[in-house]
Image (cartoon, rainbow, N blue to C red; front, top):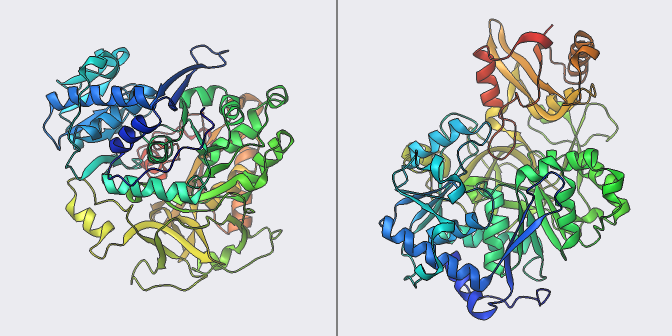
Length: 566
């Protein structure tokens, strides 16, 4: 029954309207399944909501929320990953309230961000579960536990007139994360754009994901897109993935035409951590698409993942490098499934000067990047970040985006809204990139650029060199950044060592010398400081990316012991 192709849905303006549609037309089809792993050796406990059950739960919780807050009020979602999160989010929208997707208190490394977001959003109500009720009640007077609202509370509500659906807070690389106002039209448009880009508008897929639902990609790919298309969404907890990455791969293998997304580190993690015994039980030939939304996307990661699981039938053309950001709801540009990975070897010196010139792939000074395909129903252009002049193909500049998915602006931040969203409908992303052979190539972040003696250096380029110098260095858990010095900008690297590394068995001074030599030889940059720090020390954003800004801030505050410095 669940393998039937879902009928095409008429166009609705909001996600709750799609829920009602599927509840009426395909009531017994599975809508959402959460796979819990309550014990270390658990193979997964499945809990499922059909579209009929989802509709009842959404209407019940929406009615309860409507009693607690006036239309347009903010509702903070402090639920753990699971079906209650899905229900609470959709119910908030159905009640005409503005959702603020977050997470329960106690998430490691995110306490300060949670406090900052709650202070900025000023929610009238908090939605959580009974398990977290006690700790959440300390944060807000009005709290609704989704699992304590009875089905009998369900009633029909008029479609909401509110324009804003939710506030998507940016990853929080600084202490003051900003909330992007995402309208109902934005999220429906971006869901449709993503479905089209990955072929899910023409062929049924199963959305499989462990990305946090408070993160932009997790929310759109695991909730919005399945709701718009009437697809099954299978969820698991991020912690369950980190504990045993094979769990994600088992879900990909178990569901027809699985569509999933993960950051760069997750693919490398799977390639290195999944055992041969775990691989033996996997069949991955049915996977439809695997999205990598890191910036920049490096071909080496896709190659390592493909080499690790080709024996399980994984097709190389399932890898889909993509680009997006919260200000555009999430998805902007994507490589299409079924097409070979587009690889570009670019001259590092020319790239530093703003030109994307080809180089030999085996040249040690070449930068290897993957193309992120073409825009998903949007207009993308590259402009000079100072003058705003449009740049031609092969020139590196700021990526600007225009489309129905671009958010309305930042919550209560008029000046920043004018600067980033402008008045011409074009979003200034702050990301650097170029277009080659019709492919969007993301090269880095404008604010992260390191300038030494008038030359631009991309921090992720330095980081890639550093992490390849020694096996004790943890991949994608290091930050390169510039700090002011007496004679100009100085470059610092803070790198975590692997969890299996015993520093007593590592010649740390020799490791540091190797790092300095590699960066000097490949980039012509002298590192002022190299710090080797324990796992979990380098701060990350809510989406799992390293926060260079916060690492720099902590470095300047003296938070890192200089054990690995020379």
